[in-house]
Length: 213
Image (cartoon, rainbow, N blue to C red; front, side, top):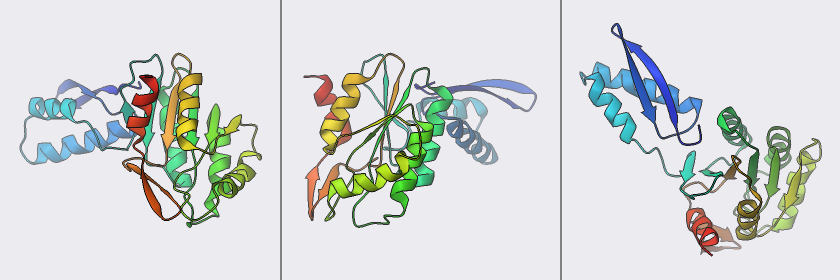
């Protein structure tokens, strides 16, 4: 589910119930790998399970933002075609409502991936919001237009909102019960690079402030 994963592990003739707060099937695989390593180090299973229950994951990687809403907000660092595809597919595994993907592409970086990411989001998401990431010295509108080339190859519904703060506000205002909003690209970053300047931009703070207006 959007709040984590529960699974059974069979070991040494016993079945153990495990709960982790990090969503996604890949998190289950990671947890099992960690269990195997811990067992080899001589740590007992009960201690391992308690450790997994207390693990909060890595900031900006499938990070669930506490919102006290009937929809879910997830922050993820996905900023490549492969990363974007993985996070959307991960969320689709447990999302009960629609998957809303908000993303952009960095400026002064590989521009060949822009239409590819647009096409991936268009094919896999229920709705996409194309916005700015770190435009740097490039024109944000030009970056978005390159993303749209790929988006238009699909039947995906989308909206363009250049200002990322406004885009996040739009996503929060239009999400419905059981929807999952993916804020992709920034992850652990707490800034946005526009031109050659860094501006404070922590998506967790942006979400909190908008919801607490």
